[in-house]
Image (cartoon, rainbow, N blue to C red; front, side):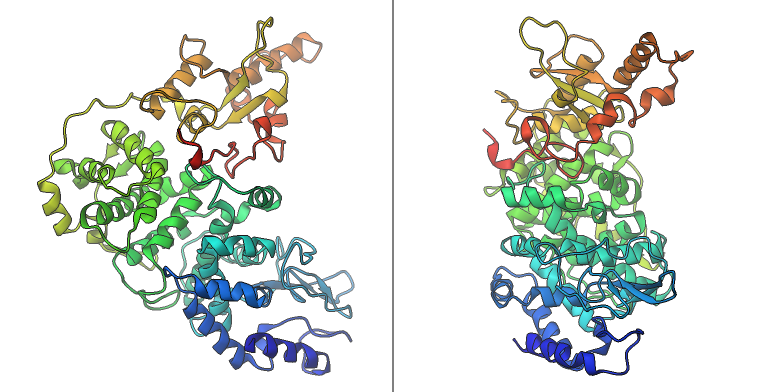
Length: 583
């Protein structure tokens, strides 16, 4: 209430202020640096930041929802840019009058603080090369903007508060921070203190967006409500995509959270700022994007996987209170998703293969009384494919782009190693060895043809679902599937192999679908077009076969929403399957 009163007073007297940075006769746009009661606002926001810190009691988050103060807080974290129109008049874009509104010089101060249903107008600060207002690189630990962003981040980590934040389209003002950082940093390593501060604010915004856009309804997660699914379908998801430089910050954050350690300097935080559970949840949410899986696996795969294994061991071996069953599920499922890249590239450092350490951690986790269904499926799949995953290299102490890497962070603690020595793992039959073509070759799935027809309707895009590869197509046949019921244990690699065999014309289990490689379908369309009078190419080149933008694939990818059978499309283009549908 005090914060709301301070801002209301500021708005009341703002038109009379003569010292304004913008020309014209209208009221000045919202500028956090020019508040009449800035210190009062900062004090209130710092209190809210501390009250909403991760804990088992989300009382503060519920109190914030009841006070309706969130739209005002979103004002503080909205980044604006100033450019000139053709006549030279100043134009404020991306949130001058409110989060995401456009305010022209001499115009009215339009001003809801948030998006739909409050009334966004325009695309924010995208593609602007201009002076930045409310610059995130200036948000130090004592600023009111930093406290406001932490408050939104803490609320987004509370599942009960996410629907409320989605009502105000909180992902959009958070996206202005990410766009500003992307424009300034371009994914490059940070050199100056301001760049480090900017990268940290971007990471916080990215994590909050991941909570809002990827915490429900995706592979291995609980079923999303219809309201959440609708929000996913109408919300821009580019803010979900990370980059290698930010991935290194995320790994550093997870290492510090697991070891209860603070970070000093620009972009720093205390040991109590982040909980290991919330960081693990953030990693899992980011991994719902296939593109993020590639980025994380290629840039920080080995250290990230090692930390995830440490977290799982803390739960399974030590019974750490910081890693509860839900946090352990996040660690297990994240390892499972990243292991898709561990068949061709290093998955874990070499030392974790000695004495079957990884094997024993996964086995111990499966024997926990409180293991969740999703966590159990992930650990079971990891054990099946463990023989085929690559253990290679070691992590060394180093300083890289301002990030301190300590090798012992990525190793199992001595007390865990001692306990592992007493664990005997029985020999088990390994899972199927993967075919080479299940990883990188796009594939199409069609409903089985109706009786009396000989071919699947490949020319009917409404009956076809595209997948980046056979291994991702497996997700709808695997855990939580409503399409396939398994009588025995599931082996994802075996299913992927069968799908690939079917697409190649070999006899195999098809799971009541017809499969075809995308490049084969594109090549056939090219040849059919030639037969129907189109210019006939002398040959079908490899680039034509691998193109994902022509022919039937173009029409498939142009479907903006609604998967097969009317199901929603997830962030990486797959129809969502819910965890609570497991039989």
